[in-house]
Length: 307
Image (tube, rainbow, N blue to C red):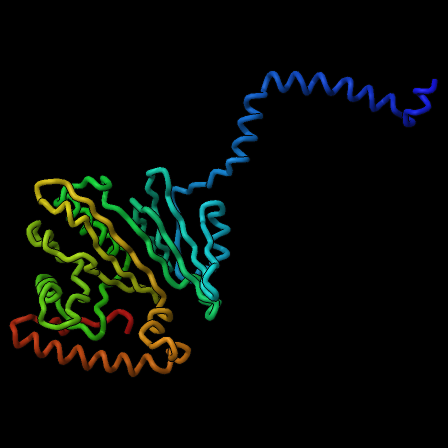
């Protein structure tokens, strides 16, 4: 009776419920304990979610991009005013990135990583640039001629997706072998920055002589694209496999035009860029006159697609 007085009222139903539930819990543990423990450990490990295909679009908000691929996007806010959104494919796997630009969708595979950048000074612009790092498969073990053909197939797909070749307004309008000959020459200090002709496919011998960081540039719907080529310089024997790496850069028109100004003048880029573009046109005319005298053929029909 003394024990009963110490117990709370209505203790019998609670005790009976516990008496019935505990054996059930024990039975379930024996039956499914390994699965339960595995689930707990998986939660503790917090393995990142891996998406095989990630879509990027200049102008999308960083917050939207990070939420869309939550668990895979690493956000870096350590630099005041700037935000970086990085996607990595780990464990030796390679991903696919789809570049969306209006109605155009360009899928590039063998992607190692992709990183976008946004600036708090221009919050309405969202992510204004991306850098996409790719390998040419098979990774670190590709015959040089295969790499050549695969690379130019990529440039062809870029053009088929609507992207137009873009030549820096200060550079001469050269096509095919002439553009490459100028880029590899020492005729002018800036010749190495020449955007090559994506429709010109050189021979293997010439391909092996193309310099690292050579670029092929494009433009579509207010976005600039720059494809750059790099390779392992220690593996340049044409009879043995090599290793190739590509960088595909994207940048909005506003961000690109600002970058043409000094840091102090970037707030006034809309005012300052038109006269800067006019000066570049004058530089182009001078370069073309010089090159014409040297036997280069100038493409007088070319017009920059961002004009």
